[in-house]
Image (tube, rainbow, N blue to C red):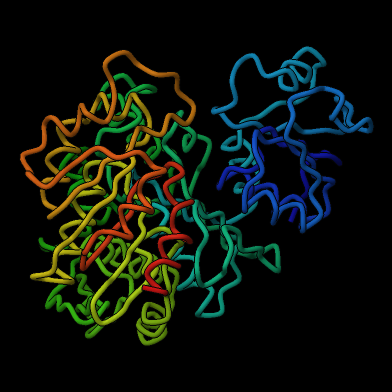
Length: 454
């Protein structure tokens, strides 16, 4: 692996899921890695244990004295505010400053690259591709936007210069346009990040630009729904229906979906996926096709899918008993909510589904309030938490009641996050789901403990 021309790499916002994977890669490839984040988290604790120095107060005094503009690369996340003191110091000091996506682009140019893009589905699909290749003995370097259970990490480090890179390609802030993949997967192009793009058409144009970044002899895999939106006349289309790459004979068992993979040349019967959900069957189609393109034997692929254990917070079973099931999921877009609820209802027909949902971002809530309401109406009971603001300031008139007021479901209510635990103690439910991309996951250990000792 050809090294980048720096000795020190300084991360501003090191604790994010994507930033932390990049920091771990630099740390494992013999750079001196340091960083800032606003708060300590499970991820930053892991980074510190791995030898990365992190501080949590924005002060230029915390910057490593050995860092100079000649020997230091500064990497920052777009979520960092414009008035950040350390970022301003680096800007005025003439340091080389890049976004995470630019650096990923620099790194990936040294590899044969598989890049997975999509407004949803990209984390599961990229982690599954990485797993299938690794399971088959292929040397890979993987940058994944979640903690893949099979690796217990968001990073897989290749052993040789011939490793294949599997990269989750983020559409936020047009980040994925820094990549030039050999194989591109597009899982979905539903409107999102309208605070960045303004409208859905601009988002689609960005995906088209990403696809145009494919290497000259590159392969495109695109979901049916995404291609209905983009109307491309090239690439391989995949989906649950249609005549392209498809799933047939889908059967739902106890926490498992079984299906036949079919394309124009191949049929793999009885594929068992222990990550439930119709949407995850679709993600598996893209992963299987990618593995076939990279000459993985069919039987090895089938065994690999059966051994795949998913990603933290993607249809993650937290607790199961004869009477209760608890699932946690990152779903934060109406399409993701709808896909999760449909799949959970199919998996547990006739059982009452209680959904606790924390909306993520004021802008997303404003743009998609009616979509959220329609998706949540498919549940049997909904507890709606306050909006998690992330990088945003409040917007006048935008709150969780904007969703609740449009819901037709009768069994619904607004709830403070600090009231959830007590409510669970006094409620009778059969299937419980915590959904959202904010800090709702911090409730998971306590909910699990309550159910385990009930």
